[in-house]
Each structure stands twice: as C-alpha cells, then as structure tokens.
Image 1: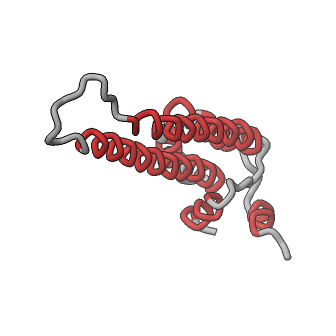
Image 2: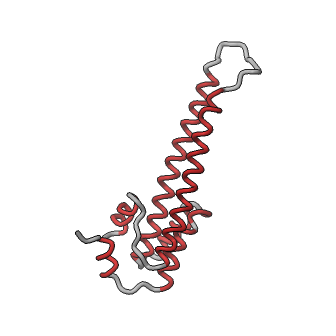
Length: 151
C-alpha cells in the first residue's frame, strides 16, 4: 500500500527554499506565538500547499492543546469553588483551606508541562522535517490537516 503523502510529494513541483523556510517557521514559531504565527503563515502563503499543510498542522495542535488546557482549568476552578462552597452555613474557619487546590493543582501542572514538552518536541522535529521538504504528518492531526488543505 502506498503512502499518500509520498505520492503527494512526487506530484508537486520542486519546493523552493522560501516554502521550506515558511513551513519550518510555522512549527518553530508556535512555541512563542501560540497559534498566531501558524495562522498568519497559513494565510500569507495560500498558494503553496506544502506551507499550508505544515502551518495547518501547527495551528490544529495549538487549538487541540488550548481546548484541553481550558477544559482542565474549568474543571480545576469548579473543584475549588465547589470545595469552598461546601462550607456554606458554617462559621468561617481561618485554618480551613480548600484541599481540592492541593489535589487538583498537580494535574493542571502536569498537563501544562506535558503539553509544553509535546509542543517543543513537535516544533523541533517537524520544523527540521519541513525545512528538508518532507510532507511529515503529526500523529492524528496530520490527517486532519491534509483533509483541510486538500489532498
């Protein structure tokens, strides 16, 4: 069975140095600019499928990570608020501190640091692959990007 990305690369004309550079930048800049740089590069270089594909992958990863992070933060705040409100009707106890903060905060921290580690790894690996002219796909997200860009 042939790989669709390999046949894709064979059908496209030779990539220019600018296309490779912009595709690599879309991955590298997502670390410092979040989703803004991949979005700008995507709209700036609409004529190049290669650049659009790589920028869309970086953009989709940032969207997925942001959604997961915001859901985790909403759950964290809900847990903290619910544990604080559970003392309603009782006299305030200054020594009482919501235990939920100590239970939930490590999970939030692990999500944030794990997401950053994944983002750093994706940015380095796929920036290098894009600068070599490879149609490398992120796991799962790469197929979405290929469908959006058009195969």
